[in-house]
Structures are given as C-alpha cells and as structure tokens.
Amino acid sequence: MTIDLDALYVDLHRHPELSYQETRTAGIAAEHLRGLGLDVEVGVGQTGVVGVLRNGDGPVVWLRADMDALPVEEQTGLAYASTETAVDPAGNTVPVMHACGHDMHVTAMIGAVEQLMVTRSEWSGTVVVLMQPAEEYGSGARSMLDTGLLARYPKPDIVLGQHVAPLPAGMVGLRAGTQMAGADGLTITLHGRGGHGSRPESTVDPVVMAASTIMRLQTIVSREVDPQKVAVVTVGSVHAGLKNNIIADKAVLELSLRYTDDEMREHVLAGVDRIVRAEAAASGAEREPEFHTDHTLPPTINDADATSRVTAALQRALGEQNVVDSGMVTGSEDVSWFARDAGAPLVFWFWGGADAAAYAAAVHNGTVEADIPTNHSPFFAPLIHPTIDVGVTALVAAAREFLD
Ligand code: ZN
Ligand code: ZN
Image (cartoon, rainbow, N blue to C red; front, side, top):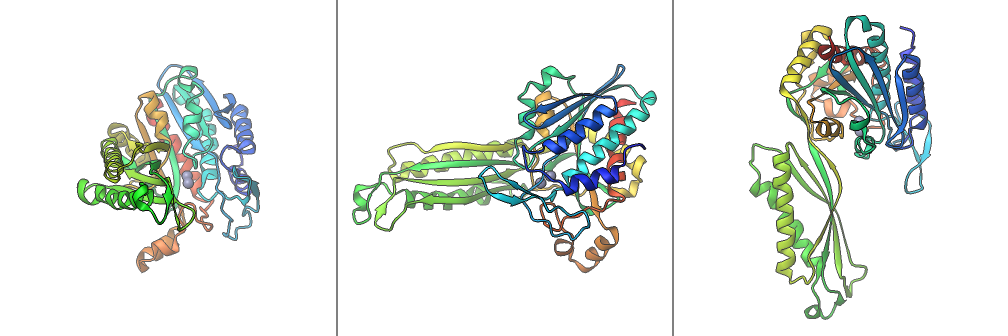
C-alpha cells in the first residue's frame, strides 16, 4: 500500500463539504485516481468525478461512491472531528459534518482502486469509478447521468456500491430484491376561491378541501395497500391562509411517499392523484389541482443472480459469519439510477462501522436504537479500523467476482 488511507479518511472527515460543493473532495479523489493511472474527468454533473481503468477485454464494472456531507454540527468528540461551516443554498451559514459516512465511501473506493491496479495481472476488463456529488439531495446520480455518461463511457455489465452503516464493524449486510425503499416528494396545490371569512357561501374554501384531502390520503395505506407490504404516505407540510377573516384561494400540501417496488409506487401515486382530484371536485373547485414532483428516488433493488454471486464473494473474503441479511431499509438512495439508465444489474450493500463490543452490549440490553448512533446523527463515528479495510476488501471482492 502506498496510499495512506487512514490519513486520507481523517483529512476528508475534517473537511466535509455540502452537496454540489464537494470541490476539495473531488480534487483529492481525482488526484489519487490520476496517480493510480486512471483516465479522469472532473466536473461531471457539477462536482462529480469519473475515472476509467482499462485492463484488456472483459466485463465493464461501475463502482460508485458518493462524496457529500450534511448540515450537522459534529458532536463525536473525535480528535479529527469537523469544525467546518459552509453556506447552504438558502444563504445560511451552517455547520458541516460527514454524518452519513460518505468520507468512508471515498476512502474505501481509493483503496479498492489501488488494489485493483496492483493486482491487474490477475483480472481483465474495465472499471469505471464514479465519485458522485449530492446524494443527500437525491439528485447527484441524475446530474452525472444527464451529462451523457452512458454515451461517453463504457456501459456497465454490473453496477456496485456500498454504504457504511450502524452494523458491527467487520460485518456486511445485503439482500436480493429491495434493499432500500423508493421515495417521491410531491407538492400539490389545491385551488379554491378566496373571499370574506363571514361569507363562506361566496367561496370555495381550500382549507376545508385540504383537511378532507389529508384525512382521505391516509386511507391509501390503511385501506388500499396489502397489509403484508410496505408503503408510507406522509403529508409533511400544509400551508393555507394568512388571517382568520379571509378565506384563502389555495392550499399547498407537501407529501413524502415511500414504497418498496415500482408497482407499489404506481399504486400509491394513482391513489394520491385520484383522491386529490376527487376531493377538489367534491369541494366544487373550479380549477384542477396541480401536482409537482420534487424528487424521485427509485427503490434500491438488488439483482438476485448478481447478489448471490457478490454474497458468495464477500463470504469468501470476509468470512461467512460476517455476511448477513440486515433487512430492508426505509431510507432511500439515488445509486440505482446508474443501473436503471444502463439496464444493468445493481448490487448495493451496507458495511458496519460500529464498535463490535458496544454493539453486542446494546443488543444484549435492548438499546441498539438509543446507543448505536445512526447515519445523520451528530454522534455518527465509524471506527477507522477495521471499517476502511473491510470497505476496501468488500469492494475489491465484489468487483473481482465479475472481472476475474
Ligand atoms: Zn445520508
Ligand atoms: Zn449516505
């Protein structure tokens, strides 16, 4: 090993950057990839980096790591804790922390590429390294793809990625099928007719329309979805009116929808559309409601065949007891756009960063939720060892499964 991965991780952790501001991180990643002999393009989808390692004929493997940090004030107490601040898109100065562990993703990727270079006489094919911006906005993968990525780079036979998680360090968790939920953010505008609060008969009241709509939307999950399946309909925000004696002319709802597969997504979206339109009609609205999709994160679905191959490779590399099915996660990721756009299989796994003894004690006491900090917590602090090594080993083992 010539690259000091510990030092790289500590440096990235100390200097986290918000989504689409990852210029320092991207610069460091690009420098390492160039140093390892890859062809590198920077500024892909604003701040993304693509590196290509050509090593003869064979499969094309896309390896993806995300780079952005979060507006969280670090409270880990680590010697290398972040004290950085940055200006967010709203113009506010905010603290910044690698609270989702994307610094670990970048570090493990650089380590894995180095190992693949060192062992290149043992495999053949092409590795495309994607250093993605703005995963936390749910838009970084799309930003990279929308630069014509698939036309400009070798198309993948497989897309691989990993995320550090609150599992015991040394362990890897993955499953075939839905690994993470999909999510849609919707903004819905209900149009009424405004007027005087004393004369409701002259108006179409959007507050009553919104109230009725919000309650009826709850019946999608409770009455329309198979109780054995998972879906979420949350109305996270509702805004209407400014004053008690004025009936407003519109109400704006913001919804978060979660689902485990594309079929469920269609089902939930159709239910929302039907109920919102029907409640507007029931209120006597003169104008149709308006729908705006703020973001769509498809469910992260692991290909069954590729997942069984990767699982076997991880078991060989890390020990059978260290590879588990850690369950479906209701959080969401944008990694699957790469596989979906390319029509290629995806395998995405979690790897642990939590102290194994502390984790075992928390399991024993039934206090895992309280004692083991999760991603996005100000206390999230993956161990440097063995987390970096396991991340490198997992990525190399999975890639070599297809390249050997
Ligand atoms: Zn995150
Ligand atoms: Zn993340």
